Length: 124
Image 1 (cartoon, rainbow, N blue to C red):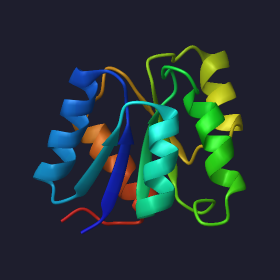
Image 2 (cartoon, one colour):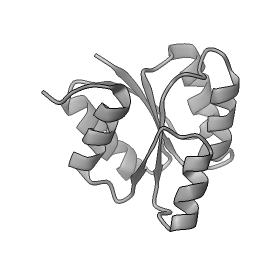
Image 3 (cartoon, helix red, strand yellow):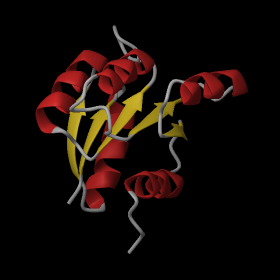
Image 4 (cartoon, helix red, strand yellow):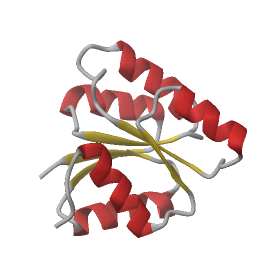
């Protein structure tokens, strides 16, 4: 069972992502800020991190830079989750080094496909 860290400050989005992942057999950890997400990532070394871009305090892009700079967390795949889907915003997010991007509102089937793809897991 893969451990997925969800860094999301919106309770409804967090619940949706958590419930979908847990229903598919993933274990989840949750953080409401980038700083809290960084702490959990270094302590628990999840298989995957789902990172909201617009977080209170440190942004998802800033948190990604810290993750990539630390040897223990540098190789953990990170998927950006954002409602900012204008072309320029998408380019900025992907240029920051995220492994994939999921748009809000979340399409559950597309979300699961992206998670499986990044983790290298084939659907059952």
